[in-house]
Length: 87
Image 1 (cartoon, rainbow, N blue to C red):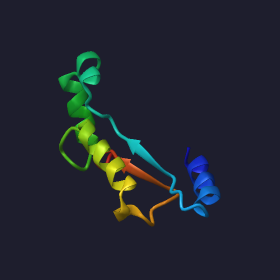
Image 2: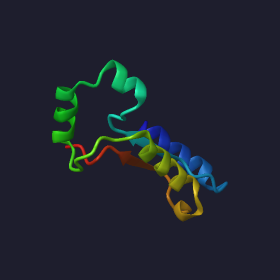
Image 3: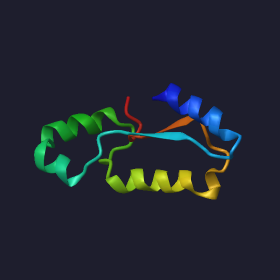
Image 4: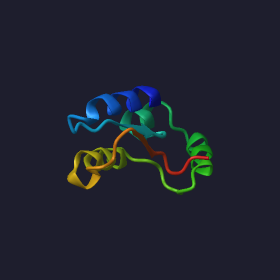
C-alpha cells in the first residue's frame, strides 16, 4: 500500500492531486464493540499504545478531514497513522 501511495502521488502530483494513506489502529466502532472487544482485549491493546485511550472513529475522520483541507496542501506520498502510538 505504501508503494502504491507513493507511486500514485508521484504520477498525480503534477496535476496537484495529493495521495496519502490513513493507517488506522484498532478503531472502536459499534461493530467492534459488539463482536470482538472484551475488557481483557481492550486492556491489552491500550497497554501497547503510547496514548491511553481507545481509538474512536472520530479520530480517523478528523485525519481525513485534515488531509482534505488546505492545511495539508503540501502533504503527499505519506502514511498517516491513527493508532495511538502503538508499539
